[in-house]
Length: 103
Image (cartoon, rainbow, N blue to C red; front, side):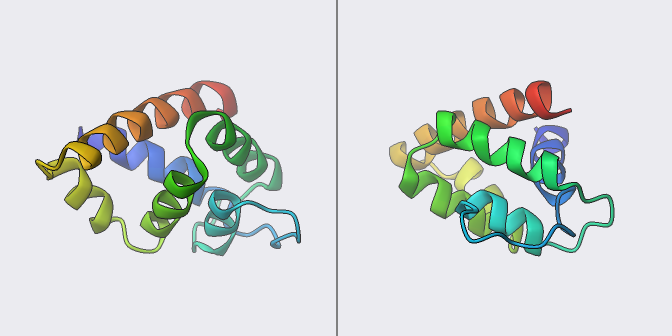
């Protein structure tokens, strides 16, 4: 599970150096604002597109905050709250899809 979280978060972090555009979504902005060195505007955009298809707007907003505070992802993953469990499963599916689609 730790490697999945690392992969999912790193996929977004890789796009950190691209300048934020006016039409960037919450995930894309979070990726671009993170401090990863292997940034790519196309990767960040791809991850946002996958998020748009995989997560609701409120889920994207919540997940985007995990880029700045990855511990919150662990809190949700370990939670026994049914809503958190559902969010984690959707987030896991999103991360898997982003890894396959965006490289």
